[in-house]
Length: 415
Ligand SMILES: Cc1cc2nc3c(=O)[nH]c(=O)nc-3n(C[C@H](O)[C@H](O)[C@H](O)COP(=O)(O)OP(=O)(O)OC[C@H]3O[C@@H](n4cnc5c(N)ncnc54)[C@H](O)[C@@H]3O)c2cc1C
Image 1 (cartoon, rainbow, N blue to C red):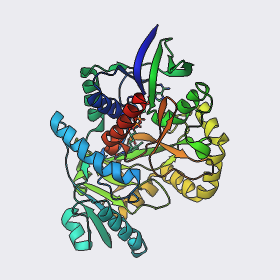
Image 2 (image 1 turned 90 degrees about the vertical axis):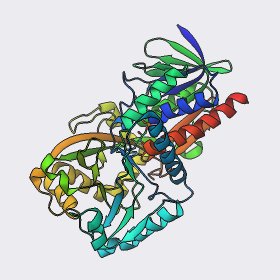
Image 3 (image 1 turned 120 degrees about the vertical axis):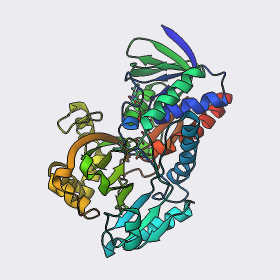
């Protein structure tokens, strides 16, 4: 069977659904299909995250992350208000546990101000306790607008809106091939269905590099969607495990308590996060995942692992950060090490307060030279728009990323 489309969005995570939603707002006349290999929306990163609406404090001013996080947060808040999805602005504290962290803490404060985060302030240890009575630290940055939300609920709602606007949701259908078809591209699904489309928008998260590789054969020269570096860029998956706090320990955390992150790494460090349902999660750590879509420590997908270790960028990264990687692995298997990190901020936490919780896998793009791609990476190739790197805060930024992609898609279709 062959279906004709104007646009096919690959991926029914938040970025793909937000793109489809924004596209149909701009061009309700488009024949649009969203394809996902899973039977439900938000089956991967969009349904396995901390649920934090980031205010925009961490990101380099002027970067896509900074701009789209701030804009996207406002857009998600507005969307949630319209659809009755609760948002709680519980605020965040980024806590310096030692004097040595103060310069980095101050840099975060300056970034927050530069990014226009309202109400961000540096506070001392006494005021810190006004917000979080059980937390300690030498100084903190308080970020009042940070919120929490159920991102899976946002994704489900976007999917309903896309369908209501005439979009077709094609779930349980893996994209397995992309071929040329005159002015169009022909996308082949595992079921055998073929979608002929003028434009494909790839929002494939943990599989972004593989979907990009599928487009390589469709038109000569387009397999290298990101110029020289992306020819060798790949997704390296990092699993993040959470513990949950027992009910009796939840009172130790009112909102969100974060450490001062290592600026060389795109991860925020294990934090204490209040959830939309009242639970409190501790984590996530960041260890190399042995399966891109495996959520248990024992999950291993040999093809994923082989792809990672064969990738020269990963080997360079591993040589550079082996010490950090070893510490993360240690903390992953030794509960006491995880607990000690949390006790730097909340000393009353005890081992029995922590219960194994869920996990998520982050899609982090790494360039061939071993550098972690810091910013969002959105790349145009003939007939395709690729999202090649959309790690945190892409859930917060999803509607803004979707807006950018939708505008580019409309311009491409008009050419
Ligand atoms: C542990 C963790 C904590 C995080 N915490 C936060 C947070 O608090 N706040 C925040 O803003 N962000 C957070 N993030 C980041 C955020 O969750 C992601 O950036 C965001 O969800 C990315 O959305 P996406 O649509 O790009 O990817 P995904 O949600 O992973 O969706 C990609 C989809 O593409 C589909 N797909 C892939 N290949 C194919 C194919 N060949 N055929 C068909 N379908 C395909 C997949 O099945 C998947 O559904 C966190 C991420 C993790 C992992």
